[in-house]
Length: 156
Image 1 (cartoon, rainbow, N blue to C red):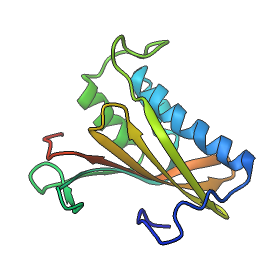
Image 2: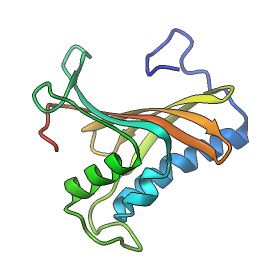
Image 3: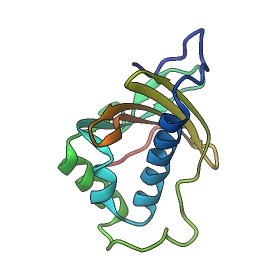
Image 4: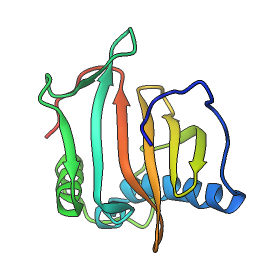
């Protein structure tokens, strides 16, 4: 499943149990990042899962961040290192950082068998998410988290 709008979107396919579990996965992503629990966040991905950041131009075209160099992270250790670098390697917290947070709204979940696509917006409008998820023996996991920003950014 790719992160592309199709003529049948949104379909709202999937069982209620699958949709709830996927919605909880998205919430766990936000909570683990906001409480500096980067190892827990990385474990929400498949072993070959991808975290990628791009930006969208005024015509809807997607472009790699970092002046075209991109930011595409694969593997558990690479995602953890990136999150620690961006956040300054803080200690885990029991709750989200004061005044900050990934508040992901307007979630659309489309499940097709053992694959799904989740679209969401971050409150404030500067980011959109298009996440590919897959069913694993351990439950639903991220296969790809695509974060779409409103402008080019420089990140490690």
